[in-house]
Length: 109
Length: 117
Image 1 (cartoon, rainbow over the protein chains, first blue to last red):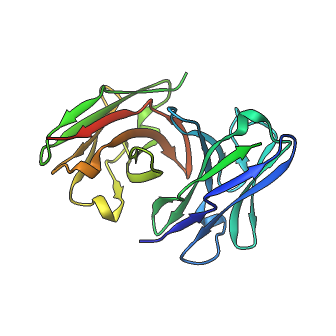
Image 2 (tube, rainbow over the protein chains, first blue to last red):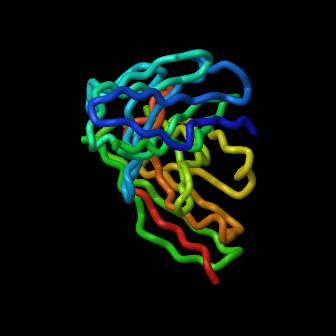
């Protein structure tokens, strides 16, 4: 089965900018993988942030944006807030099924 | 408003089966698929499978194929996930989520399934 890889952990300062990436073992990620991004805090259900690469849900803060970068899906947080500390998961559509990445633990310090 | 409300926690013996329900409201049930996702304690998210309430079409993660059944009841707007031959590593929180056109938006609150003798 395909493997989706994310950075295990990243640290960013409040007000800073950070980019999380999502790679596929099958090759370069493109729009046909329909990348979705989710934020999850302890004890909570995942909260959707981005769908189909770069589309925001109505509740997604403006500081979050999705893109394709260097053959990967990317989630960029600009002007990071303390409440953005969480686990972030990407989800790719590969071979007619969804595959989650392992998650990135984002620390705001 | 869109809501997905799941059934309560379950404790099962190894080898048993579990059936989790996901009652939906606030949107046309047959127009959107339902994905099921699980999360073992301290681990990441794992996509399990998807069902279309419109025609019953399903897709499954290869790892779970043969042990999981997804169904829907269009009279009660409820989706069901049944997992058979439970093992200790099936202990997880199970989520349902509204999923159509490569957009996953609303999620249930999660159901903890504990497999233990």
